[in-house]
Image (cartoon, rainbow, N blue to C red; front, side, top):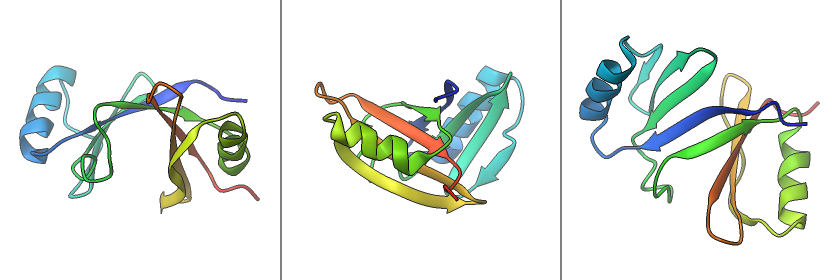
Length: 116
């Protein structure tokens, strides 16, 4: 079962400008600050900036649901009619992400650890 939406990732074209804006908005520096991802954790909610998001097809913020078995949930969503945007992909540290779209084109992100 999904826990809940635990991450919202924003695509950005200017990482430094977006980082300054979100640092001001959230009142603290990012917990993760790399050239490929900048992120904060606020009350258990992850807020991230993806400087490659537009290149990856993101058109706006994407909410990510934490799931226990990302492959099983991804496959179930595809079987239920979701369109594949990104297959489960390792993003480091044992974490995986995937994205699908619903019939209206809304993007849904999945986030989880690799299944055993």
